[in-house]
Length: 73
Image 1: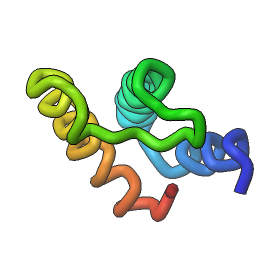
Image 2: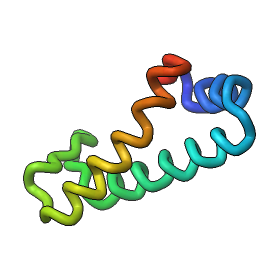
Image 3: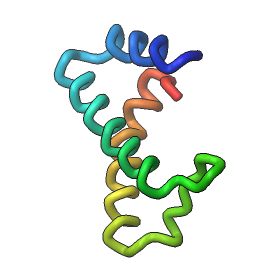
Image 4: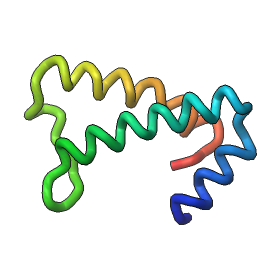
């Protein structure tokens, strides 16, 4: 499924507040990906500072319920 279709699906399933939170978390994760992804697009949190690892873990944990609830992955 293309990104646009996934976002439309999310928007249809989540409340407005949930969708705003979801988009903010995706933006934060995207910023980390831009900063840390290797040439194949893979991130390696184990190579980051403890602070960045913790930030990544928090964002991933906050995103998980959205993915589980609506199977948007």
